[in-house]
Image 1 (cartoon, rainbow, N blue to C red):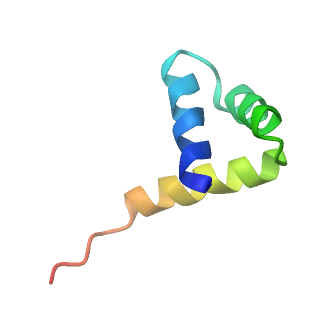
Image 2 (cartoon, helix red, strand yellow):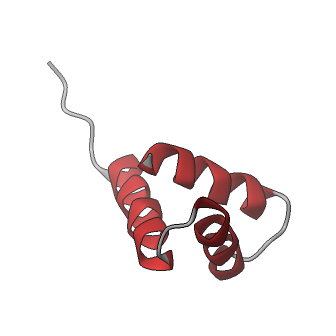
Length: 55
């Protein structure tokens, strides 16, 4: 799932790998297109930046 792909990319980035290479490696390991992993990473980043609505 997308959250798992994002988690894997973040782990690789924290280990010092560049985002582009991390996305390519995660995509290859998961058997999905790089674009799918990239889109998941961007969506997660945008979700983190979105202002939280107070209730």
